[in-house]
Image 1 (spheres, rainbow, N blue to C red):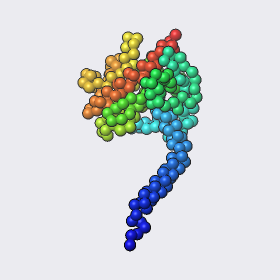
Image 2 (image 1 turned 180 degrees about the vertical axis):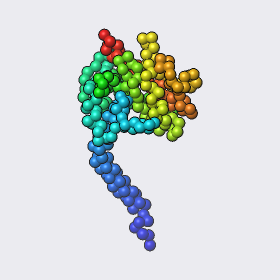
Image 3 (image 1 turned 135 degrees about the vertical axis):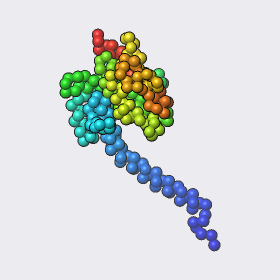
Length: 249
């Protein structure tokens, strides 16, 4: 005698019920965790911005953020302005500029829209100003991104790089201090024009003593990731040039 559970209709109904139950559970979890995820993303962005301007807990050769507990207070203390910059260099204040999604803004620009450029003006305890810009590009396997702090002459004062899926021990090393610290002091401009910073192999300056050559030493075995970093800097930081030129007028 055929069992009820041997019927095809039973299998189909069982599968449908399971999909509905599992789908409902996932939807509930996604909805209930969304506030926590959003808050964590907000804190991470604040940590990244502070790191780039030198507010961090670095020890020795290790790169360390300020704690998530301290990030909101330190962000409020050191970040004096949040701006949204236009392509002609005009800027308006926006206290939630740090929530602007750079990836979406890049996609908007590709579709012919107007891209919003977030910029954060920081000031340390000695009164020195930092202009921190978030940028995004493509590495070997997936997205790479950074927060670059500059002075009014577009000389790099600090940087934080990160990635989604670069190769451990190779391209993933862009978030190590030996690579990020190499950018400090590097000029983005050359003879009045934007040139960017090239991640170069065999640049005859492995200790990076020359800060005006628009080059830093590449990571061995990570050529494509390094090329992605160079391209990201050229394409995204160039957009801020009109703002810095307006600063000097």
